Image 1 (tube, rainbow, N blue to C red):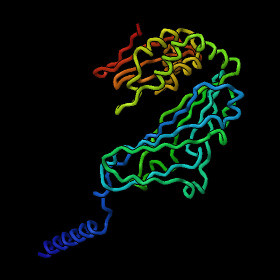
Image 2 (tube, rainbow, N blue to C red; image 1 turned 180 degrees about the vertical axis):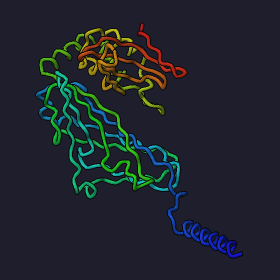
Image 3 (tube, rainbow, N blue to C red; image 1 turned 90 degrees about the vertical axis):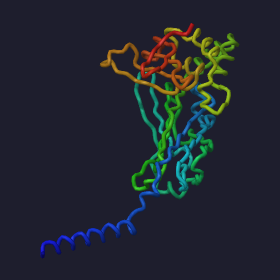
Image 4 (cartoon, rainbow, N blue to C red; image 1 turned 135 degrees about the vertical axis):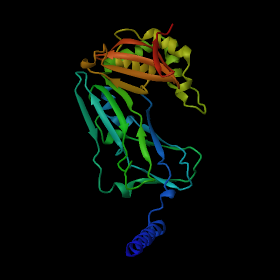
Amino acid sequence: MRKLKKTRSQIIELGAVVLCFIFTGPNLSAAGPRPYVDVIIEAERHVCAQHIMKNTIFLPLKLTYHIHPTGHDQAITISVPPGASGLDVEHIAPDGTTIGQAIPLEIWWDSRAETVEIRSPTLETHFTTWILPGTSFDFSKLGIYRISYFHPRGGLEEDPNGPVFQSNTLTIACVTQERYDQLHLMLSKNPELVLASYKFKNPPSSTEFPKYRRADCSLKKINEFIKEGTKQDEVLLLLGSPDAVYYSTSSEGRRCDEEWFYETSPAGGYYVMFKNGCVVDKGEYGDWNGETARGSLK
């Protein structure tokens, strides 16, 4: 009998603890899925002359913050870093040397950050800001620059409802003035190529991603020009920054060390393979039923 009373006492104590947790503990039901923020970085030029790049105030970058629907009624707050403090810049020299640049997070970051409150649970939201990275970064060296975005406060675990930030990588090239003039002389002699390049880099707006509306006729014209041995700055001039870049090593047994992808549909697009900065292959790719297929444009 004594043992039974002890068991009942333990049950009562356990029940009290559970009730206490329900009424005073964290409200887990209030935490919805963490919203995602896509930061899209764009530039008006993808190939620039070195003497202009030394005065990099000419190179404004357009940052578009695209916030996906939150799915719940709780408002979220987006903090936008001041100036170029959210950027990460990687320089790849012609000899392959890689150097990274970033602005250290300052103690005054929170006080200078611009905040935007998002309340709609069902509608996509986006806003755009322009920055001048040349006041904080050095773009004067020849080679390729890759610019991405990181959020100093993004993804912190102490805020279960805080947004998660992700970014594209913008690719641009710094070339000599002689090379810059050579590239534009090439374009001036081929107006059809200029038009095809413009159409590919400026697809019509629509409710879907604009890159899915890149014209096939424009791509075919550009594909005729891109041949084995074409350099990366020429591809950047014609196609703009790639949507994705894949790197490979000699240990993987691939005949290219870098591959650029340009999406033209939800299931495929155009790829360009490089070895030591020059084209070794190009063509179309597609992903149907989980299998990737490649082919050449006719």
